[in-house]
Image (cartoon, rainbow, N blue to C red; front, side, top):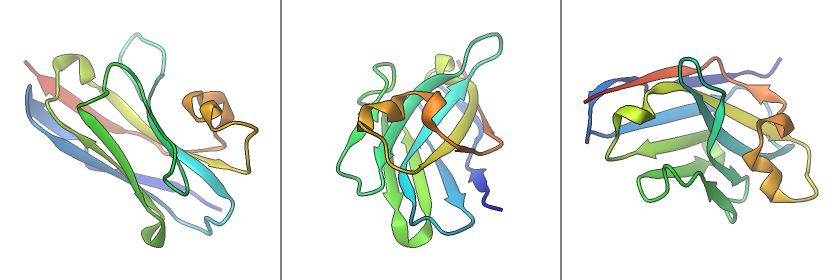
Length: 128
């Protein structure tokens, strides 16, 4: 059964950088897109970034635009999230997600409802 393995979280100071990785364990030919979401304590899960498998469409939440970069390596079945100029409000558990099967519009990649495979999460803590 397919699963996602995330890595790269940790404890850093404000202004530092981290890179998260997420690798899918099985065949990815049906992958339409991959995304990152996060959830802080007491808050709902929120969208961070997503891209289509081809990489030609990328979305970012306004809160991370200009600081975070999502990228993919199809040969490694891996998606990355490069996080720069981290802030204390970026503290959360970060989840990787994959959408298998096409969507009528790529904008649905901004909504967790449309993903059908999730990682277990990796903790990112930013101290101020």
